[in-house]
Length: 578
Image 1: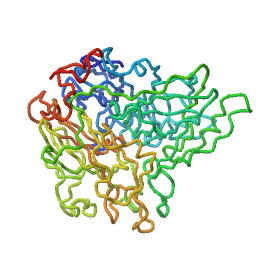
Image 2: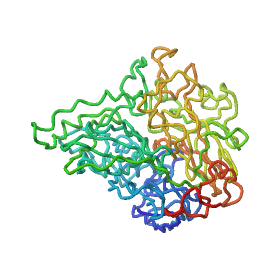
Image 3: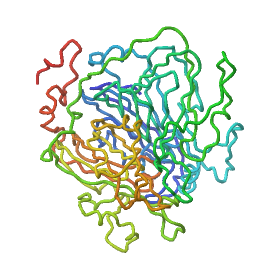
Image 4: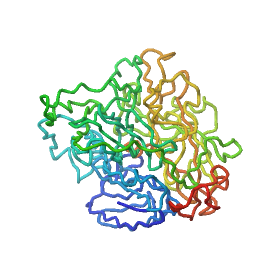
């Protein structure tokens, strides 16, 4: 779907799924045949007829959406997917997702080298048959009934049950001209797995934008593309030698060699990034030929979310190369001005956010996350209405569960309950605890990374990760692949950085403007099966509809205000009047 700044998208969603609608279980897989749509990333209202994720479209019904985009909305790559609480993982996990591109208007001040760059649009679709089976069974889904219908894998070349598709294709191939820049627009539609892939040996990656927002230092040379569920990235890609190249995945392994007892299998959500752990590939063919290798040689079997060695093949063909990319200096809307250096007096609200899950009472074993069930209860820490402002001891209250004390752990309640509130026209700050494991996503207002490792822990952040996530970057979804080092961690301690170790949590601080739009501002873990199980909350944005932060022009006198459109290319940015 293509839209433009200042435009409107009218969309009618028709639900062709059928009754019955399955089980109704609060904070569990439920209502598998009802649906809705969430537009992930755009800075628009969360109220009807806009991006209202509480709308329910039952089987056989339809719903009319209308999305208004501001004149000063930054162009970028966004996406859409179902977001009905309880059926999100089941529907998104089967491919119900698509890309939204907000094109740069012809007057947008960006180098022609970027606007004229040929685009390759790619939706990376994670498929986890185990979660789909669980969600189908618990929600009593009669449409995707893989249990009584004797579903079985029929692909003779692999026994994968957890894999990544590109535009719904397994190991696709694209053709690129040698030396020519291509703009890869990428979306990760995933209910669980993250993915990191490295450039082929004769190719380079230049990062232009993340989550639909251009970098302040674009283009940024990166050693890998790192996507967590919900993330997008615009990457300029160029390959300098003819032949066939492989786009290989690599580990982001947050375990860092910690002694985990029985928990030693690398997992996409835990670990230190090690680009040397790429799978060893066989030669594609004899010298001088570039035929595709057999799929079973490239994919292998995979026991954890991102062990799929290769996700794509590139055929690089002649002729001569393009010029190197120039530094971008794009105009920015006032809702995306730099918030890093603001003093505490400019921050309206500051609070802590942390996600967690619990096994159902009576579950044998050491507990979550060592034991994961399809009936886990997930939630957010922090007393509803005020956010977390207590002591570290108050925060670490898992031992009080389920009800032996006043524990601030709260699963999703309902659309009328809020974890915090703030007014339009304010700047707010959140410290994200446990962010190596749970990708934090918030609707309506994107956020800026302002501090990394806020508690000064002994952590491992590989250079390749530090180059992807920098202070000053804007995101709407963040999972930071860092890990606590082995220092001071007891043997056998399960420690991917989200369970409280002796030295505390790894944390990242973010800031954002509550800009223009009042009402619901949902936040949740973008491991969508966790969201279905209750790991979701919302902020209440109060104040005056349409009101923006007055300090934006003091930070950046050239930012484009609400209601204004981006200046034409012929106007020098430094001559733009207020």
